[in-house]
Image 1: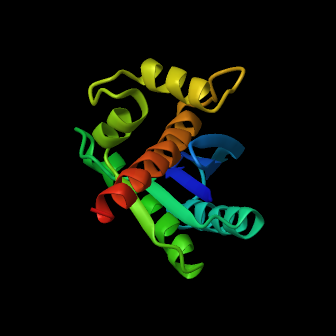
Image 2: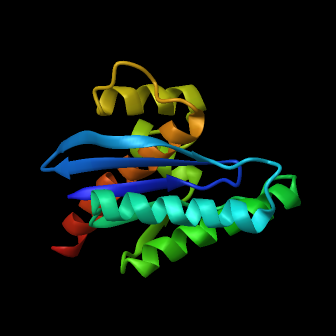
Length: 164
C-alpha cells in the first residue's frame, strides 16, 4: 500500500510518500512545497493544492494522512496553517481519497513510542524506520514522513482491533 503523509504549512508543506507492505516501510518520494511570502495568500494556497494534486496523480496513494492542527499562541499562523490543511484535504477529496488526521502526540507515540518525544527523536526514528542515510530536511519533510508512518502503524492497529 502507498501512503501519502502531509504536514501542512503556508510557507512550507512537507510531504512523504511511503510504501507499507507487511511490516516493511519503504520511502518512495518526499520533499516539500514552498510558497513565497510575497505571494497573495490565495496564490500560495493554489500552489499547495496544485502540487498535492500532482503528487496524487504521479504516485497514486491508496491512503492519505495529515497532521491535525493544534492551536499555538499565534492565531494568525494557526489560521494560515488551517487554510493550507484545507486545500490539502480538498486535493485529497477531489481524488476520492479520505484523509486520516493525527495529532502531534499521536504521531510521536506511533513513531517513537513516547508521546512527549522531542523533534530530534522523531527525526532519528524516521531515518531509522525508513533506512535513510540522513534525516530529511527541512523538519516539515521528516514530520510528513512521520505522519505517513503513524498512519501505517495506526491502520495496522485498527485492522487488528476490527477482527476481534
